[in-house]
Image (cartoon, rainbow, N blue to C red; front, top):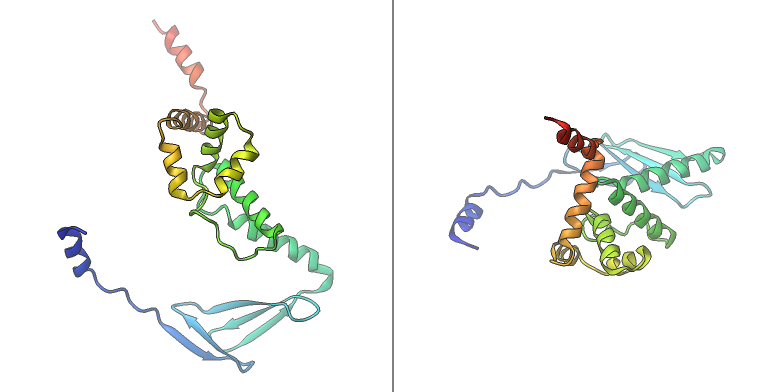
Length: 194
């Protein structure tokens, strides 16, 4: 750390401790509400049917048991929400698809809470395409290979002299498609101008 960053670290105000409010609930439990949170939701899976406990900061508790006729609809809604949430933070549609495929694979393996590795998929779809083009190996082989790599390793591969030209070209092609502008016809028009 250099002198300037040390001085900045020393003058920075300490982070405020988050307020924790312990509330005695109407069902006899004690619950901690952190910060401005006013409602907590807890899945309850110990009965015949799944339920959700809604815990309010005022101490009240509401228990909702999913009605059996609506069980499939609730399950589908939950799956759509859980899987769709994995695309948060992904800008590229191909990276979004990778995120969805990845969580479905984890869910099929029984892993509900495992976090995404490497901070998301940003740029991974382009790296996969570049590696397929460069190596001639199938997409499935490249995906399996990349699962074992860290974000730093993936970033280094993208920036390597072997892949960077391919990555740059692929990203330019994606940008042109996203803009919905036919640049070839624009340049053809330019050529025809006196």
